[in-house]
Image (cartoon, rainbow, N blue to C red; front, side, top):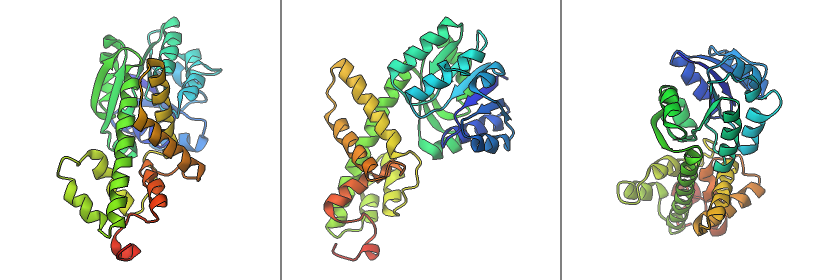
Length: 303
């Protein structure tokens, strides 16, 4: 089995690296946060002193980082992955970043004889823990087939979507649909609550019809329970929509709904809510309506 390096042990990276350990892979890990490294080492991983060190010990190096600049620093920077990566090794970037940055990093890897795929994921922390993420891959078919067995330990669906960058374009499309879906759900449940209805009853009434969705099933119960513990943070979703709008601008594509939801996310970040779960998009709509989306007995009938 391939020796795997894993760089980036945040909300997503930590459970993902643990799933590789459970699958029997030898995993060497690195993160700028020492406590995160120590936590995964307790599960059986080996620690590295840098991205360079992790890459030098690995055949496949996985990165799971917040944004494009973080990926560039981790792969291309001093003590970075490319300084230690062996020719013929593969960098699998599972971060959600701009497709342009993915292509830039891929070109730098290719110049050193290192293969690269972009493989962003959808499903948030719960799916990362379960190992049932949806993984969208961009890269050469041969390289994809080489890393596919590894990715199948992390996700229930692993799809090659095109050349390098295509994985992140697909992820941006995913993030648009998720964000707009949450916003629409928020408006609908706020309306129902303001009208005096129990939002849980409304949710149960519509979830089996055309309005039903994975997003609705995952996020409506969180909103109604007032549970905004982050599975995917508002500030990260704002970053994804920003990247979507930048890509759209370069292609001369108008994304009006995406733009409006991105502005909502920025407003919530300015209120100090950037680290809440993205289901907290509903808070923006609630503030305008003067109501909280929860069961009537919790907020008073006839609100």
